[in-house]
Image (cartoon, rainbow, N blue to C red; front, side, top):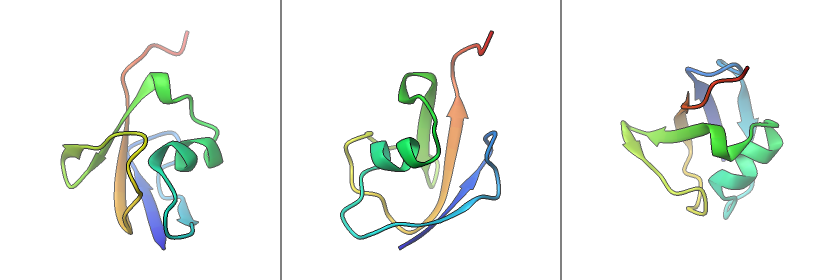
Length: 66
């Protein structure tokens, strides 16, 4: 399954992940703290424990980094 990350510090990064991978695991692979972001798929927030779907993800920072 291919995932392209948009609107984050890792914008443009493309990942190849297995079927059944959670969004939480995607964040772990990208070394992003899940407590600091929202994940959007087609403009809708998705749960971290939801199964990742191929396509574009928007990872939006919601916490200050400093």
